[in-house]
Amino acid sequence: MVVFVWPLCLLLAWKSYDFVAASWGLKEASRESGGLPYPLVPLLKTVLLVMPVAVALQGASLFMRSLSTLRGRD
Image 1 (cartoon, rainbow, N blue to C red):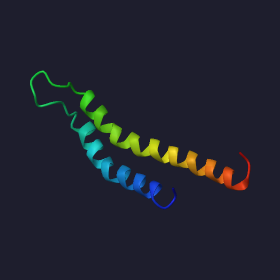
Image 2 (image 1 turned 30 degrees about the horizontal axis):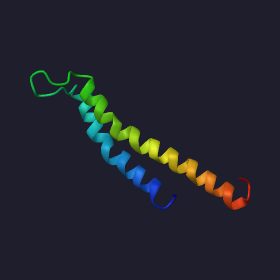
Image 3 (image 1 turned 120 degrees about the vertical axis):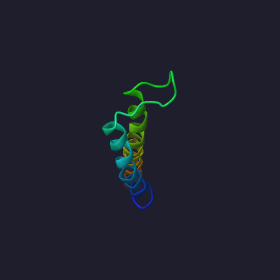
Image 4 (image 1 turned 30 degrees about the vertical axis):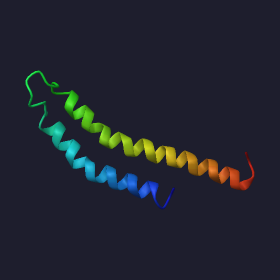
């Protein structure tokens, strides 16, 4: 967990931050007629920041459960 999951989550969050911030700053909307309106496109791109946080929390949960199992406290 510590070696693979958390560094990957940090990298994904760090690299996607500028992409998401630019989308919010530009108030980006779909180019297609009848496409998604303003707040939906940046909200969808915000998932790129939410996903690494959720995976990191799941990794922390699994890490703590593994430590508990190794210590014999099931």
